[in-house]
Structures are given as structure tokens and as C-alpha cells.
Image 1: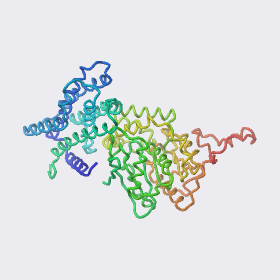
Image 2 (image 1 turned 60 degrees about the vertical axis):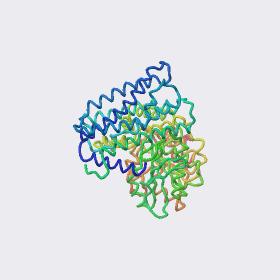
Image 3 (image 1 turned 135 degrees about the vertical axis):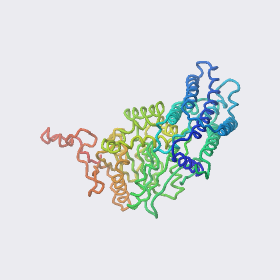
Image 4 (image 1 turned 90 degrees about the vertical axis):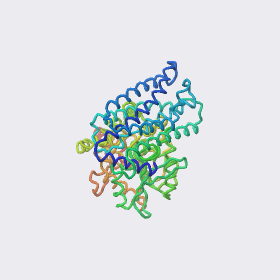
Length: 210
Length: 329
């Protein structure tokens, strides 16, 4: 972990330590999570075109519906911001997320055990493991609010859902050497980290007092 | 926040406390521990004349978490690299639980570059009970979540006394634990156990001074697992720590520090006797003497008389019986 990331995390904790999670922050967080869930849902919808006996089908089928469920749950629990500019800002970041991750390429054609599918698995692993907000909250902050309860549920469910990615990244035969797999995993992780970092910078801008 | 970049490009977060040329005690974490768990030792050990090196293993805390996992040998290699990077040529390697296995493997692989070994609450092979525990913990972690995994560990790690006195802290511990770790990082560490075939046969290669520590009520890695280590390492002693459980180093840091420091001093002064004997520590960290020889059968939980005495009582003194718990077997 570089000092830059550690400093950013520290800044975020200090930001949230000032009080409850403001509707502006709730909105930013929820729209970001929903963008991720939208990417996953769009790709995983294609899983339904796969035969039942396709190795990853059962696990990814389950994940598809959970992603949709969680996206709506967090939306329902959010105290939405009344600031229209914030939605424009979130839309820009959402577009960046699609661009940087190249998510659109996973929407073309049928799924197969190949490098593209492996990249998608690495991307969705990164989505579920990098994007965690609960660890950024002060441990003294109660999670007993609708938004934080839903956020916790999303992150706990991510911990369960990521099992599919862990297994497949390690064991699926996508015709890749170990070094290729490591490179893909690192690349996808870097893409997600850069977008997540950008979101955090917007939540707690450097030098801001609030 | 110091970090070492390994040859394979992974960052290893570490803290080195204490100064000068004092002996270094390197702490290898248990499965879901972090450097911060050892905070009391960062003052206790330097105050007693030791430096202490604590680090997060790959997959833990602030260190890199290779998504595709790392094997036991990777942990040994990267620890060796860290020692070389810091110019530590002959550390005392203290490893607890999962980290104890790494410490044992380190001692096997680098016998000429280790001053002493402290395997603590650990194992050198997976017996059926430990395999069941490992499976339960793995299932809890992967199917329910990190907090549940910590819940499963809580009664194995801590005594009733500690749980009662710290009841209000438990939810905080759970939350800090879940926030301070990545589920997949810890899961990868656990999965390295899936291919673990045991290293008991290799322990005979260890000839450095070795202090084995096992808590009285350690039901996760109980006595017989430490007995295997004691019997295999001829330069060892086994110390039983009374009234505590698997994570006794968190519960009684003063006592654990005293045990570590006394061991280091005895080795440094040339007084260490690695005779495979078994000792019982006092509960009071300032007791003198701190250790008393174990006269009973250290493998039994039922407080029966020592086998030789029991045999004598039954046979009028004619039965040879087993050797005493303090034998050098």
C-alpha cells in the first residue's frame, strides 16, 4: 500500500468521523455501487444464454440475481441528495468506470472460457474486493441506519459472492499461463482502484474542511 | 509506514522497534492477525533489551494481497528477504498458529541464519480434529463472512475470564478485524493449508534453540500437536502457559514477553539447555522462578497422578509405567 493511498484512506476516515454519512456522500456511494452492479448485471445476463452444464453457470446465475437485488436494496436505503450537480458528477465517474475498465467489451458475443472471460472475472473480483466503504468509517460510528445497514449487507454479500471469482480465477482453464493470469488480475485491479480513488477524492477533497 | 518491496513486487508492511544491536525477535502472525496486534510487545520487548520486528504476511493487513494466493514457501522466502533487507542476520523467529508453521519452515530452510525459534500455539501437521476446525473456519469465512469467522475463533482464542472482562469490546474487535483485513487475503492463506502435507518429518533438521509455547486450554492446537514438535526438535523445551487459550499472547502479553525475553537471554548468555524438557509457567509474569518443571503427564487433561506414581500406587512400586512428563524422550 503506497503512502498516497494510506493518506487518502486516513483523510476519508477523518471526513466520516465528523458525523453521519451526509446525503451527498450516500448518493455518491450508491451511484458508484449501482454502476458496478449495472456492469456486472449486464455481463452476467449473458450467462443465461449458456447451457446448464457450463462449468461456471450455476454460480454466476446466482450472482446475477444477487447483483440486481443489491443494487435496488442500496438505492431504497439511500437518503438522496438534492444537489443536481452531484448527479452530473456521478454520471461522469460512471462513464469513466465503463471506459477505464473496458466493460463494454464483455457485452459482445457469447461467454467462453477464454482470456476475455478471465479478464471479466478479474474485474469483478476487483469490484467486490477493492470497493469497500465500511472499513473507511470510524469504528465508533454506529451502523444502525438504513443506509449503513444496506451498505454493510452489500459488502458482506460481496464477500460471499467473490467465492465464485476466487475459485474460477485460480482453477478455470482459460488457456492462460500463471504469469498471464497474474498480469490480468493486477491490471483489472489497478483500473478499479483508480476509479475508487477518484470517488474517494470527491468525497473528501484534499485540503477541504468538510 | 515502512514497507519492503519484495523481489516479486509485493509490498510487505513491517515495524521494527527497539534500537542498537540488540537481538531481534521477529513475530510471524497468526492467520487473521496484523502488526497492530503486537502493540504491547513494541514497548515490552525493547524495555527488556530486545528489538522486535513485526510484519503483515502477504494477504494480511497492510501488505500486498496476491489475488491468486501465496504458498508457505513464498512466506518463508519473503521473510528471509525482509531480514536481509533490514540487515538482520540471526533473528529469533517467533511464529504463532499459522505463523508458527512459517517459522518452523523458516528454521528448516535457514538453519544457519536463525538464533532461536519460538513455535507458539501451532502445529506441524494437520490431524483430523485440526482439519475439522480448519474446514469450519474456512466455511464460516467463505459462506457466511469475516465477522462470523471471527465469532468462531473467539471462544477458541480467549479464556472465559478475558471474554467476561472484555464483553463490550468484542463487537469492536469483530468490526476492526473485518475492516482491517481483506476476506480473500485471509482465505488465500487458509487455502494454502489445503495442500499442506505436514512438515513433522523435516523438523529433525532444526538444531537451533527452540522454545515451544502451548496454552493450557488451547483446544484449536492442543498439546499433542506441540508434543510432536518437542519430540522432533532435540534442542527444544516445551512451556505450558496456564489458564489461557490459543491466542494467549494477546491475553497475557506481559507473561508472554517475559517468556520470550528469558529465552533470548538464556541463549545469548550461553545458558540455554535444549533438552526437550517440559515446564509450566507461573501465571504471574513477575514470578521468580517463572518456570517450574512439569512433574505430571503433560499430555493428559485429566489431573491424574504422574504415570509412574500411579503405577507405583497400583503395583506397590513394582510397575515401571511410563516415563515422567519431564523426561527427555
